[in-house]
Length: 111
Image 1 (cartoon, rainbow, N blue to C red):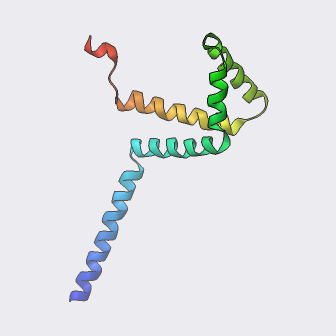
Image 2 (cartoon, one colour):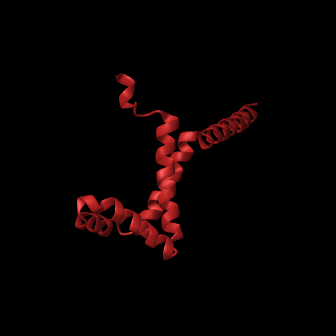
């Protein structure tokens, strides 16, 4: 009798854990966090962040938007598709979190 109770408990707990994992994996914020984490890790492995920071600091402040646009165009011309895709996924996940999650309130909300 005790052996069947242990088996039933084991089966029930497996089903509970399966349903928990399914509910976590289908959660919007979990998927956004996964997309952000994977794309950030891939972006860091593809690009040298200290070099980017050095390049951005060497540009005059007024020329910074033109420099960023020129760098983006050069990346497209040189076929750095994976780098642009990961950057796009990072931006997408952050904007999706902002607009869907309503994490930070709008400054006009309190006016």
